[in-house]
Image 1 (cartoon, rainbow, N blue to C red):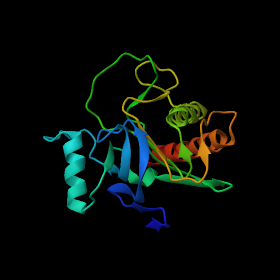
Image 2: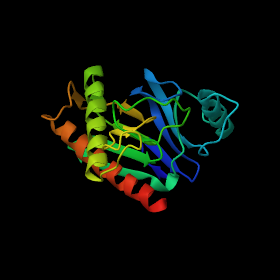
Image 3: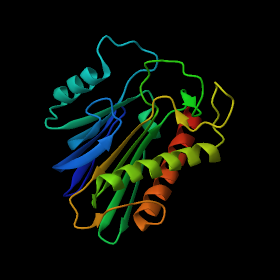
Length: 220
């Protein structure tokens, strides 16, 4: 358990759970409460690979959260990746904190533009980014872009290929990402590559995804 006066992080073999002391703004592609909303908890839940579930992913996440007694606004992701691939990075820019959490698996690696082959699989590279700074919605979307580029760069560096096209993968077929904007006092209207915040996000996501993928490779 990692804890401070803003959030607590719990990492087990079954899940990663972040509890915020105050509701924060979030943008995500999560299966539970994705989109733009507010969040009190974030859950990254491990599910068995290639196991069919009677319940929908969002119901599975809701039921698990209720069982744990996590109430409030919950954003939930799922993954078949081992929680042993968990990687965390944290850096400060003056008063602004940037926190990155990643889990990764490669069984579903794909290159953008590959022929679609629908499978109801849980996301294999899940990335959560929290910053204590207040981000505009434009900055939050830019952060998603930076995170995606960093993930793709890590896959390219490690020469991970798509089994569909045989080309360098740019992600997996079911990745998920979340960006959480904090309470300040710093505020950013943008966080692209020409902004120090964008640099910190990019290099820490790159490092975290790289390390997480290496752990996934070792475990196969």
